[in-house]
Length: 129
Image 1 (spheres, one colour):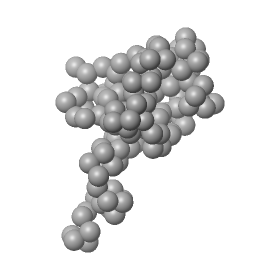
Image 2 (image 1 turned 135 degrees about the vertical axis):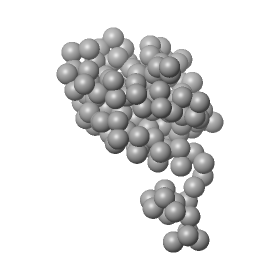
Image 3 (image 1 turned 90 degrees about the vertical axis):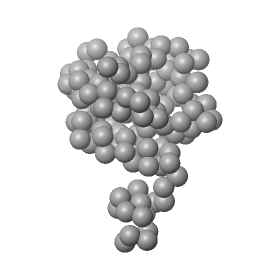
């Protein structure tokens, strides 16, 4: 079972944000945050679903490591960052259910494969449209 990796150091975050690091999903959370706790099983289920795929899942406890959330300008919890090759591609603020998170991960993987904006938007190649 794939479990999201907890990030707890600046070097671990720098590795994810390095050029060529591939797609990653980062969940910013805190133990006192009820929506974060509600989202945690959804996040873990989606991470497990994508085990073996070229996307990695991470969690940052903002209470224990506020310095790791600061560069991402996290202002509310939970916040989910979708990262590709060191660039933040999208950010979602608030709890996400598994279906919404899966849709965002599929979009990120599509982008990582270099699919066109049309394909990412419609799910069809331009020739099929």
